[in-house]
Image 1 (tube, rainbow, N blue to C red):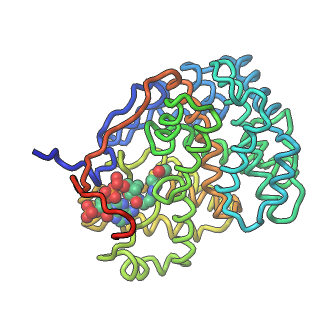
Image 2: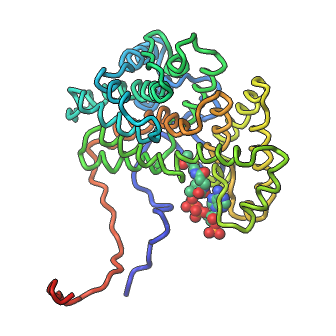
Image 3: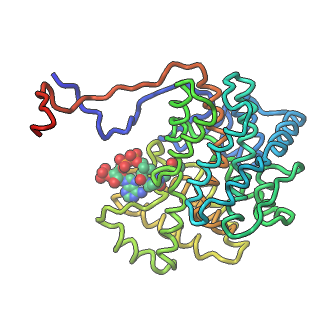
Amino acid sequence: MAEASTAGKGLQGVVVADSSTSLVDGENGRLIYEGYKIEDLAEHAQFEEIVYLLWNHRLPNGQELEQLRAAIAEAAALPQAVVDQLKIYPTNANPMAVLRTAVSLLALYDPEAEDMSMDAVRRKAVRLTGQITTICAAWDRIRKGHMPIAPRKDLMLAQNFVYMLDGKEPDKTASDAINTYMVLLAEHGMNASTFTSRVITATGADFYSAIVGAIGALKGPSHGGANAEAMQQFVEIGDPAHVEAWFTREIRGKDRRIMGIGHRIYKALDPRAAILKEKARQLAHVSGNEKWFQIAERLDNLARSEEYFIQRKLYANVDYYSAIVLYTLNLDIDMFPPLFAMARIAGWAAHVIEGMGGRLIRPDVTYTGPMDLKWTPLSER
Ligand code: ACO
C-alpha cells in the first residue's frame, strides 16, 4: 500500500535537531534565547551580548563582552579585493544577491576558509558577523555612487552600521533601534535559513557555504524577504484612509496574502512583533511622520477583526512592524532583507557550531513517478 503523501506539508511539525539556542513557543507566543525571555533581552541587551550568549550558552561578563565587541569591530573591515568587486557590481543588483555573492567571495580571501576545526569556525563566525554588516553599509553607499566607509574599532556593531551609512557620529535613536532590531532577529529555532545552514553543515561543507546557503533561503518572500514586501504593500496603500478599500480590493476573498502576517509556528502574536510595534510607534512619533505606522496598525487591526484571519490564527510576524522601524530610519526598502541577515548571522553561526560533526541530514521522498517503462531509442521518439 502506498504511504500517505507528505507533499505540501513543508516538513511542518517534523523535529530535525536538538538545540539549546532558542525556544519558539508558537501556541503561547513566547520566544526564549538560551533561557532568557526575548522581552528582557530586547530591553537590556547589546547585540554582541546575544552573539556571546548564543555561541557560549551563557551571558558574558564585562571583559568577555568587550573582547567580543572589539574582535567583531576589528574583523569587520573587508579585504580590498572584496571592496573592489562591490564597486563593479551592477548598481541595480538585488542587495541580497550582492550580499550572497560578497560572502561567497570573502571565503576566497580567508586563509582559514577550509579549516573545519571548531576554533577556526568560531574565528570565521566573528569575522563574518562584522563583515556582513560592513557589506550591507558599503553596498548602500556604493550603489548610490559614494565611497564605502570603513568600520570603526571603538563602536558596537549596531552603531558601526549607522556610522558606515554616512560617516557621521552615530545617532543614538537610530543605533539603539538597529540594536533592538538585531537582538530580536538574531535567532529563531529551525527557520528555513537556519535549517539550510544546518543541512549544509551536516554534509561537512565549510562555514562560508553554510552561510551563503542560508542567505539564499532568507531571500525568499515567505521568509526574510517579507519585510521589504510588507513595506511595499504599505507604500501601495499610501494613506491610512485607504486601508479598508485596499483590503477589500486586494485581500478579502482573493489569493493575495498580507505580507508580514502569518507564521508556521506562531499561532498567537509573535512576541517580536509586539516589541517592534511599540518601537515603530515611538520612532514614528519622534520622526513626526506617523503615516506608515498608522497604515500598518490599521491594516493589522482590520485583519485581526476578520473571521478568515481569526480562524487561521494569522497574526503580524516579525517582518510586519520591523518594516516600519527600518523605513522610519530612512533605510531603502530593498535593504531590509540584508539587515535581517546582519542579525541572523548570530543564529546561523550558533547552529553551525551546534551542528558540526552531526549526522548527514538526508530526508526521504515519496516516489510518485511511473514504473517499468520500456526504453525507446532516440530515433523512435
Ligand atoms: N495573508 C492571508 N492569508 C494567509 C497568510 C497571509 N499573510 N498567511 C497564511 N494565510 C492563509 C493561507 O492562505 C492558508 O489558508 P487555507 O488554509 O485556506 O489554504 C492558511 O493561512 C495557512 O497558510 P500556509 O501557507 O499553509 O501556512 P505556512 O505555515 O505554510 O506559511 C507563511 C507561513 C509562509 C509565513 C505565510 O503565513 C505567509 O505567506 N505569510 C506572508 C509572508 C510573510 O510574512 N513571511 C514571513 C514569515 S516570518 C519570517 O520568516 C521571518
